[in-house]
Image (cartoon, rainbow, N blue to C red; front, side, top):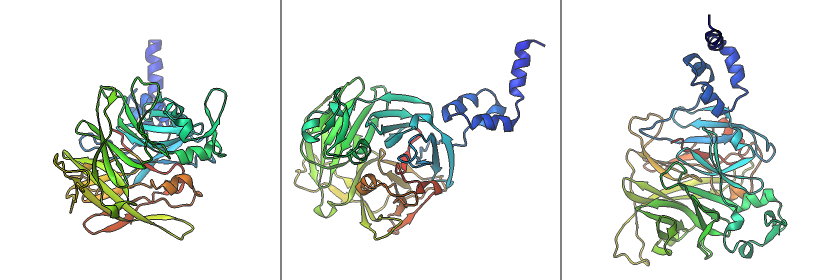
Length: 397
């Protein structure tokens, strides 16, 4: 028998238990590559990931298997399937020491303990470093801090980098991934820093708004970038690498000012999801969502900014909306038994959860709000008790 044939036969004949032991030493990317060798290897090595639905994309809940701050070398993470209510743990070395800030179409945006930002495709091992936040105009004027001789962050107002990272990086949205034809487009909402954007090929961040507005969410809709604050909606025209001036689109009902807000596209219309919560006097949970409302943006070109241009949506029918720190999305629920229509699924993205990460037994505000019944149902996968970084939606495709 030819030596090459004998070698191939011996490798194919490895026992499943031995293959599984080898797989435990590999990361997710290596497991996926090895599982493509043959069917027997695929059965033993392919990570037990939740199913990917290309026709009806659904997010997985991404969780850390260990607390990042107490275990910065952790490489084990969990994906939780909201349909089956099951989770799998897999090693992802690219996420070691990283805190995720957002997700879209298979990519994560992360920050490490030295405040470096990256785009990571965790299931394929791809990594792309983003420009330093110190390139944002007015950085030192708005955020007086400590810097080393090379201009890198060394601290902020007496805080070490760990505390600085928690308080400064609130939410970073991937509006376009590196897989898109135009390259990536990433928008950051930074503490006390308003709104900044970076695009493919750029070496620095661009400040979109230098006024003191607290932005909640952004979305690319109808060829424009929309961003929402506590009391107003704004947009920017953009083409290629240039953004036009900020335009105020409309005001928002003052009664919704303190509610968290998200922007979602549904069937060619722009929706605003508003989420309200309350602080709890509890040793295991300090914040809980109590109400969610959905509004539709009325695209009337004659509307003056002083008029509220959102109307309440009574029901979503067979649609579920997913909100949190990641890119907000609406998905149809027809044919999916484990997902309820007319509901909003949310993760914990309250500011308190970022500046005050709590102990390993602290419960995060993860849940489902039924708009028809006006009821809240929490879901707590076991891994979510490891609450730092806070669990987030991961869109695999």
